[in-house]
Image (cartoon, rainbow, N blue to C red; front, side):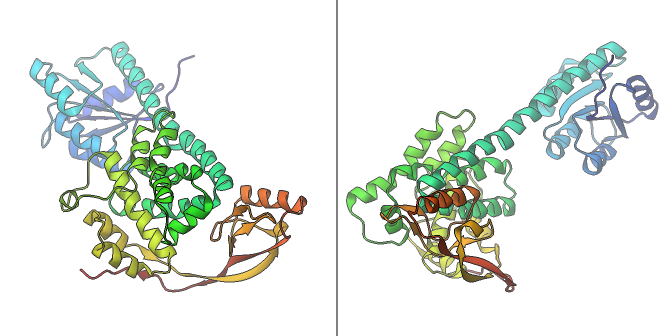
Length: 396
C-alpha cells in the first residue's frame, strides 16, 4: 500500500499550468498546496503554514526562487527547501545551495519517480527535524522537571526560586523575541541544581544578605560550576550548562553597552539568568519591582540594557493572598507555604514561599504519619482579588 503523507507541501511557480500539472501528478500521495509567484508563496506560508516541504521555481517575476526561499526560511524555518527549475546552470545551483540552503536541486522536466523520491526524502528529513525538536523541547524538559522535583525535596529553599526565575526568563525572552526559548527556560529550571551541595541555612543567609564566612561564600559561589558538571553528562544540554555556569558572572560594561544581544546562546542565557536572579533576590528582600530595577540600574553589577528594558516592561499583577491554617491532608497546588516547615529535630522539609506541589504534599504527609511534624500548617491562598496591573517604570 502506498504511504500517504499528511504534512503539507507548498509548490511555488509563476506558471499556472505547471502548478496544475504537478498537483495532478502528486495527488493521492502528498498533501499539495500551490502558489503562483513568490509574493503569493509568502502569503501562503503566513496564512496556511507550517509546511513540511517548500518547492520553488528559480526564475519568477518580482523575486527569484533563491530570494523566495531565503524569506521562506524566516517564516517557516523547519521546512525542507527544494528548487525545481529549468535553468540548471552551475552558478544557479551554487547560489541555491549557499543562499537558499536547499535540500534538493531538481531540473525541469522532472520525471514523476524522481520528484516523488525527492519529496519522500524531504519528508523523512522534516520528520527527523521535528523528532529532534520534540526530544529537546518535550522529552528533555520532562527529565528536567524530574531533576527539579528531586531538588525540591533535597533543598526546598533553592527550589523555591526556580519557578519564579523561569517566569522572569520566559517573559524576557518573549519581549525580546528570542528564539528557542526552551533552552533558556531549562537553564532557569536548572539554575539552582548545584545548590544540592549548599546547606539550607547558608542559602537562607545568602538570600537575606546576611554576613557570611569566606567558606560559606565560596560554597555558594561554586554552585554554578557544580551545576555545570552535573549537566555535562546530559546530551544536548551543552549550552544550557554554559548558561548555568555563568549565572553569577558580572557582565562587563564594555559588553553591556551595545544594543545588540549576544549571538552565543550560552552567553545570552547567562545574562538572562543573572538579571532574573538579582531581580528575584531584591524582590524577596522586600523591594518593589520599581525599586529592584532602580537598584540594578545604579548598582555595581552591569546588565544588558535590552534585558533591563524587558524587565521594565513586565506587567506585575498583585494577587491578594489570604493566610489560613489547614490540615496537611487538605493541601493543594494553589497554596503557598506561609513559613518554613521543619521536623521536630529541626530538619527543613519545605521552605516559606514554596508552592505546595504533589511531591511536597506527599513528603509532608509521610512525616505526619510518622508524627515528626504537626498536622496543621499555615499557608497562603489566593483571595480572588487582583489589583490593577502595575507596569514597572524605572527612571532613565
